[in-house]
Length: 135
Image (cartoon, rainbow, N blue to C red; front, side, top):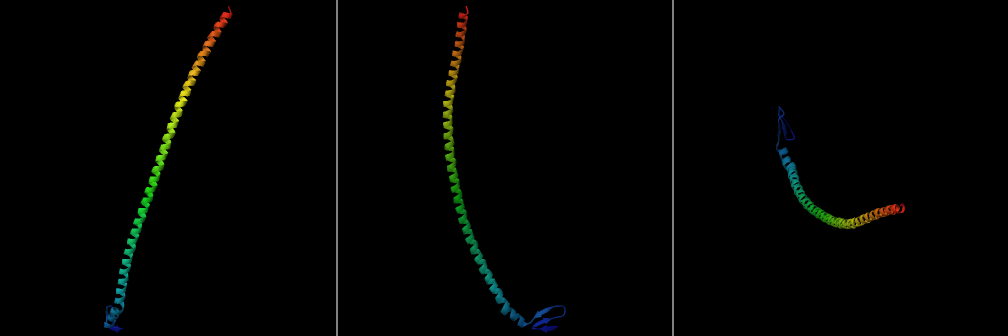
């Protein structure tokens, strides 16, 4: 068995620490571990706070986005309503114009029928006059 700096080295690779190493670990390393443990706890609390703030900000952003979406939806509904009104008004005007055109076409049909009738009578009279003149 060999001993160096309070560490005993036995045959077979077994290592034993003496009192001074144990005291050094207690005096130096354990306080550092406790400090690190405290820092980790503080960082964990800080991360929890940041997560809470992030959740709040995300909630506010979500609310604002919902409000903007609702605003756009309302505007689209308004545009759709105005467009429907214009289309309906335009169709009504077209229907009115079609009625006027139908009336004009009907009047032209009557005039054409009258012209054809007059033409046929005139042709018939001309034929009678030609037959009477040819006698």
